[in-house]
Image (cartoon, rainbow, N blue to C red; front, side, top):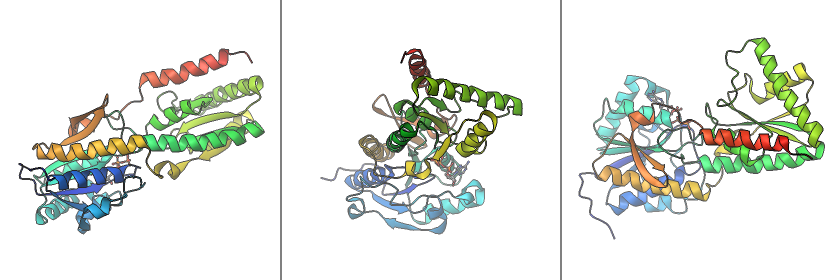
Length: 348
Ligand code: ATP
């Protein structure tokens, strides 16, 4: 049941770029199935933008995407590509697209990858579409990015286990979560795991503090830990965003010990947050976005990011999508503050 493709679109290229995210494969599947439906060939380029420079590509067929929806990682591999920050690299990539008669390029990645698409348009006149795929959920113009829901679930499962052992010894754990410079994962996981403190860019600033001010921060953290432990005689978990405290969770544990005599165990969850089979939410989001990307191209549009807001597929200019990092919503920040305040008022 192949539907007619009334556009001039014959051959589209597809690549995954930046940090890999669970659900990228589901998006690849959706792009391939939708494109074939409209009789369009899909050329997969490997290793992010490097694939354009190194001419690493192959035709994506049905058999490549069969059984792919539940797999983490990305069939096309992902990578950062330094050469793309320079005009020469971008020009070379544009030449590959011309040589291979590519009509359009779909990139699944984060805001950095969308900057790459914007740069490419200086030297290539084909259509370009971005699909937001990053565990960080820091891309503006979409409620969620592909991979975020799975990363949050993975971190929750891990911290639930940490809670068991922390309870047994009444220990304090500092758990560091991914997100680059965004607290989306840290806040969501912190609330869902009933963390006693959430330390993230949105509620806790360390940058540019004097040594004295930093020590005051340590005392604030330690005071809360001591009060909670006296009251509940229980475990205490802090979720902290990566890149927040200089030296990360390990250094925060050292600093707390040195300045406040509090013993903490640091735990960096790291790359497990990027792996694993995507949860239903990411599979469904990726499927909707992949199909929408192809249909948006067929409609003749370009320079757009596919998003989803209030359960509806949307589009936004790539140049708008990269303007601001998406903020953690005030309602989430307040929800965390309120529940902790309520817990503090509760009598044992
Ligand atoms: P994530 O945040 O999940 O890691 P991302 O797409 O934001 O995803 P980046 O490392 O920022 O990850 O960008 C991925 C790639 O996009 C870079 O390695 C580079 O090839 C390209 N890129 C990023 N920024 C630019 C830019 N300003 N100009 C041209 N290309 C860029």
